[in-house]
Length: 126
Image 1: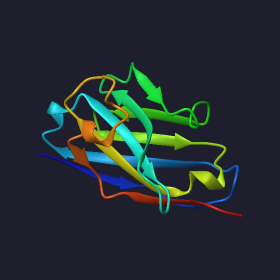
Image 2: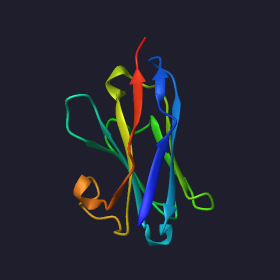
Image 3: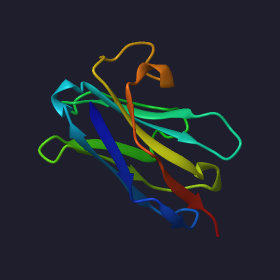
Image 4: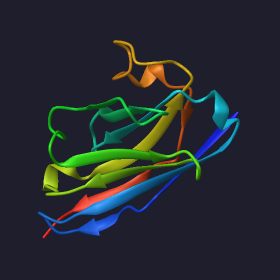
C-alpha cells in the first residue's frame, strides 16, 4: 500500500503564496501518476493538477493554470504544489492522490486514484 501525508497548509492573504507538500511512503514504486484535488467548504472535490512520476507531463485545472506549479522529487518521494496569486476562492482542503494508472481521460476524476492523503487546509483571507 501507499501512504500519503500532506503538509504546508495554512492562512495566507489574497495574492500571497503557499507551498504544499505530500510525502509518500510504502510501495511508492507502483505510483505512476500523482495529483492534487481540493474541496471547498460545502462543495465537491475538484481536480487541481496531475503529474507523471517522471515530472515531464503535467496537467492543471483551468482556474489553476499560470498560478499553480506541480513538481515531484522522486528521491524524497515527495510532491509539491507551489501556489501563487492566491484568491479567496482557492480556500479549500487540499488532498494529494496517487495511482499506478497513467494519464487517461479519467485522471480528473477522484475515482481514478487509489491512494489519498488526509488533506491540509488552505485558507485565503484578508
